[in-house]
Each structure stands twice: as structure tokens, then as C-alpha cells.
Amino acid sequence: MSGNASNQGRNVVVVGTQWGDEGKGKIVDWLTDHAKGVVRFQGGHNAGHTLIIGGKKTILRLIPSGIMRAEVACYIGNGVVLSPEALFKEIGELEAAGLNVRERLFISEACTLILPSHVAIDQARERRRGVDKIGTTGRGIGPAYEDKIGRRGLRVQDLFDRAHFAERLAEVLEYHNFQLTQYLGAPAVDFQETLDTLLGFAERLAPMCADVSSRLAAENARGGSLLFEGAQGTLLDVDHGTYPFVTSSNCVAGAASAGAGVGPQKLHYVLGITKAYCTRVGSGPFPSELYDADNAARQDPVGLTLATVGKEFGSVTGRPRRTGWLDVAALKRSIQINGISGLCLTKLDVLDGLETVSLCVGYTVAGKALDLLPRGAAAVAACEPIYEVFPGWQTSTVGIQQWDALPENAQNYLRRVEALAGVPIHMISTGPDRDETILLHHPFAA
Image (cartoon, rainbow, N blue to C red; front, side, top):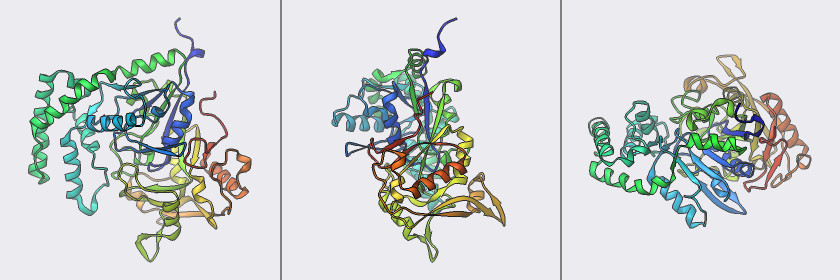
């Protein structure tokens, strides 16, 4: 027999349980001191992870959050769609800040490329939809995934055979330009300009390309632990979210297996990141959203407070986020789909000072009670929230690092969330900085 299971590394998957923007980046960075590598396994540069370390703010879109720790390797798995332009822009920003990126970043050659024509299609479609737009970031993510599934996609590895790449690109652009000019009423994308631009990245990409699946297996065999970093959130998952108001990839924990090339038995713990309230960017139903009853286009004063104190603006697009109370019925759906081992509740400090704090515990739909988020946008839009109301706490929780130091009312709120969710809260974030964290159970502990 070869190998010793006791010497294998322990792997943790971090996923968002809401509509994204739960604070995953900070938690991934916090956990990375126990990992040898951090892996992105889905999405593209439509993800935005904001890290604040020692008061300094860094926004990552494509590169794993582990890049902030000098001794950690970072991996972009085959499930990610890759814009070379966005990648090198982000690398440049990090290198300007003094980080060594290229020697620690490994990119799967099987990543599907995002082409300029994907961006053009994405933006033209949203313009055509008008008020019914999905609310994409306009970065070409969806069209790139379409080509991947349609077996038209060009991969990173195709860049290294210039003649083959040119031939494939010509076929794909013919198809894309037909859509752009004949259906979407948009200008065509130039073939030669696209070819020259993409081939210009090949030499710079080559040193970072790797068999990511094999590298991850080898790291585990040496006893190294890995952290798999999800992007977006479970309720934006293309299969399990509020379809069609979703992203174009699978955001759930199981996607780490397919998107990085690791066996599912190698995923030992799933940490679900849950904001102490809810937010959503773009279109789609949001049962616990706070808005003014007299003007549905305007947020409720408490909703505005959450948005202002929580600095709820998209880290990629800058769009304001819609805000609402924590929805436990939606959280339970996420726990079910992901097999959550434990929760990390973030931004608890944003609730400081509120007279009361509400918790959505279920819905009524046509007079019937539901305690689990239903499937699809139409069904979710029909949900009327049922709330439990708790007394707030009038003292600051910012920077608290011990459970016993939390105000009693905050503890009661958290205990109720835990009881309704049926999963333990293992971590609590009490501020944006790395050290503003309460640890109740470490995800890397057996």
C-alpha cells in the first residue's frame, strides 16, 4: 500500500451562503495561515473580495485571497473563466504593492478564455433587455461559460499553438459577430486585433501554467492543507439559485471538486460565510429586503443604515447593494445544498446601535407557511417574510475577539440563528481587519 491517510493534508471549502458579498475574502485570508495553498475553482473576474489588513484595503477579483501571505501558493483551477487582460492588470496592482505574485500563482491550462467578443455580447444583451436585465457585471463571464458548455471555448493551452489558435478564434468570432451584428445590433469585434492581443499574453502566461489538479494532489500527499475559495454566493448558483437572476457557474461547495480537479472525498470541511444581515446586487427577488412601504424604489431607513455603515457597494462594479434582514429560510437552503460543516457570521458590528434586529425565519406564500427558500425566481418573488424581532445592543462589538465579551443581546441573536439553521457558528467577524475575529472552532481542526 502507498500513502498514509494520517499524513494527508486537511482541506477546507469556503462558500458564500447568500447572494455573494458575505465577506469571504477576509475569512479566506484569515484561514490561510493554516494552508499551503488557496484555490479558486469557479467564476471569473466578476468576483470581488475586499481585504483590509493593518488598515490597508486590497480588492481581489481573480487571484485567490491567499496571495496576501508570502509563503502561500495560489491556484486558479480549470472551472474559472480567465481574462488574461484582467489577470495581468490585477498582477500589476499587487506587484506595485510589493507582493511576489508570479512565482506563487499557478493557472490551469484548461481554463476557458474570456474573449473581447464575450464582453461585447454580455454588454449588448444587457442593453437589449433594458429594465429586465439580469444585472451582470458586463465582463463576459456568462458568454464564456456558454462557449465552454457549447464546446466552442478556447482554453489557455490553445494560446501556445499560434496557428491552431488563429483557426479556432476565426470560427468563434464568426459566430460571435453574427450574434452581435444581426441580433444584438452591436458592432463586430475585429479578428486581427483580438488575435494579436491574446497571443501577446501567451509568453507571460506560460510560466504560470500548470497541471493544477496534480499539484494539489501532491501538496496534500506531502501533508499540506488547502483552502478552496468560492466566489459569488450559493443563491446565485446557476442550478440552485434564484434562476434566471444568477451567475453563470456553480458556486456551491461541490463545484470545488470539478473546478479544481480534486476528489470529493478530499473536501473535509465546508465553511459557510453568512452576513449578519443580507445584501443583493443587481436584479432578482429578495424576500427580506428593506424598502420604504410608501416608495418601493427607496430603501427603508434601517436599510439605508445597513448600507451606509456596512459600506455596501460592489467591490467590482461599485454598484450599491440592496439590503435586508438575515434570512434563515434561505440560509437553510444553502446549508442543505453545500453540506455546511460550520458557519462564519460576518459584519455583526454593522448591527450595533439598532433598537431592534429582525430575523426572517420563513415565508407565507398564498396563505401557506414555508421555512425553506423555494426554487427559482418566480417562486421566491411570491414569498412574504415572517420575522422574529430581537432587542438590539447599544454597545460596540467592533474588534471583539472573545464570545464572552459580546453584548448579551448579540449573543441571544446569534444563538437563535444557530438554533434555526441547525449548524454551529464556528467563527464571527466583528470588523473588516484580519484580527477582528472570534474563533469558536477552527475549520482546519479535526
